[in-house]
Amino acid sequence: MQKSLATVIAGEVAYKAPSSELTTELVRKGIHLLIAFVPLFASVNIYATLLLLGFGIVVYSWAEKLRCEGKSVFIITRLTDLASRERDRGSYVLGPVTLGLGAMGALFFYPEPAASIAIYALAFGDSFSSVIGKGIGGIQLPFTGGKTASGSMTCLLIVFVVSFLLTGYLGVSLLIAIVATVLEALPLKDMDNIVIPLGTGLAAALLLL
Image (cartoon, rainbow, N blue to C red):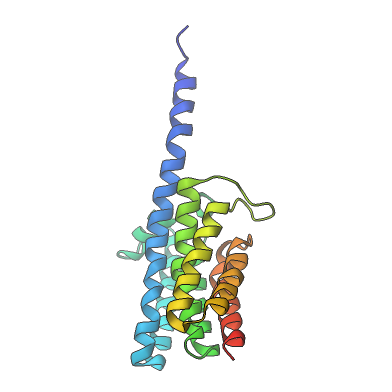
């Protein structure tokens, strides 16, 4: 018996949805990774870096307000549309704002190398855990809103390596990585961009005392 047209269409949608979701995540996390340049800029001039992050937040907020009103701002609106997840459709996309605030908070509150560890945990740990988690899938962790074991293990490994390269301490690096992984697994939506760097930075600053 031939399948009905509706069944075929439904099957195609079900097949393509994960690919589309992964593409969106790749675009979103590609933008997310740009925050990794912040420690480099801060090593040159931390005050100019904070000013640049603040300016970026203001410009994006203005562009996003216009986008919600049906207007378009060159490049920014297009990138926001490409990086928007299903839950963001038709609403204000808060991610870039919390991303900038998280990086600013890490620079403002913590000394080096804690500030850099915090920002790299956000840039690399959070980004790659999300991409791997959605790309590979696997066992979903309870009470995490769909986070996967593969994603969390990716976050743990990346933050551990980054912390060890910056500190040279195995035990301390492992503890920092565990803290970052637990924070990344929390179902905080866009607020994880603030919680991950501030929590990881605090752990790094205390452990490195």
